[in-house]
Length: 133
Image (cartoon, rainbow, N blue to C red; front, side, top):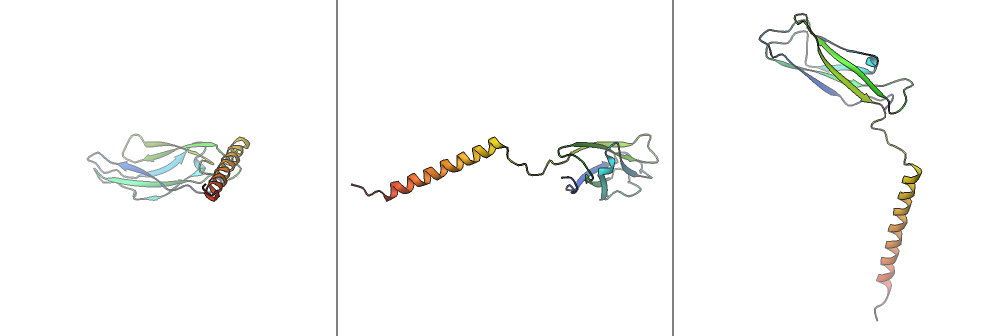
């Protein structure tokens, strides 16, 4: 999955208080944060009391990254009128959706299954062609 973009992931933020949240901002932090991108959502700079909004993000690993590498970041959402930020810890695996090449033993099983099926087809054809006495 290196140099490809993941499907969009949605993060939901709920303001369960009776006060509006002001100065909303969101960003990814951490060692692998540059590979995670905020792509949109419904959240603006404020969130009304008892309201819900969303942030959308994608994972876009790039550069010289080994296949099947686990990458992590934290999505931090803060507000100017709250003491602490809301955080989501996210982890993604490069190469998770890529096709794997069968190993030698797997190829052996594939060839064995194909030969077995071919042998059964030939045997059934011979049985059909054999005249009954």
